[in-house]
Image (cartoon, rainbow, N blue to C red; front, side, top):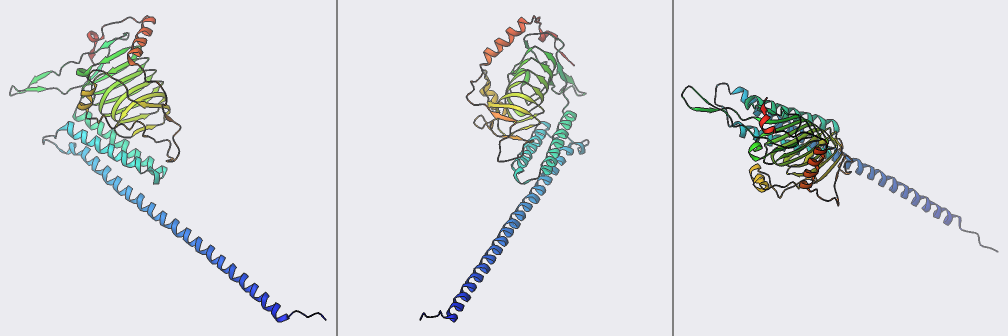
Length: 366
């Protein structure tokens, strides 16, 4: 006769199994709940830190922008009081704006697109106000070419005229900045004595080769097509806009490029370069050379050993983890021979039957 299973033992085993199952479910539910709470706590902590970072940035940025604006407006409040050293005053303001620009650039990783654009508009306004004040308090006459056709030009700067005041002491008129405008197929050379410390402006040029052999104070270029611009060390900023198929060789403290396409830049820059609304920009190391280059580096106050040419901030590309498609660093590309390029350019002009003329004699103040 077969023995019957113990009913009580079976029930006890089933009860133990059900209890273990329920405990396992409760433990799993509790663990999932704890994980959820940990994730929410971590997310809340990150948001708190980020908000604190944004608030701190906004406080610092607004305070520094206000201080810069006060320095710009301080000159208007001088009245009849003696003005400070204007050259030094505006140089310091420019440096403060550049420092604030770097602060914004390094903070873009945790700022919203709207906040970045708003701060950039503030910086653009400060830069514009600085330039407007510079022009009012340090007026400069402008220079232009009267000749329309030329292959080479070595332009001579006129010395500032002297004037006597009521006591018979000599007074000098303010120096003026060069303006090169409305030129086609010309080789324009400004040497050290013609550019050192001055603000150079170039506009509406096409198929030109421009050489600035010296250390300009600043350089601005607007509306250039298929031009080559070679510049010695620039003490402050190099600003360019609306360039099409151009080549630049520049050394400067700050580069800003706007609304330009298909342009190659051989660059030495001590701050972070900035581009905006630009595409197909190629960048390589600066390689322009002439006998006084080393001395011009020193005179311009540029650190030759510090070159951030591969550090470019694209204001139309805010992803910190993905490289902007609007600019590239040239790789395995031979450095241009500027002497050969110069010869080739002049030969091309001669073939185009452009009649040379002595621009130095025809140049006039406008």
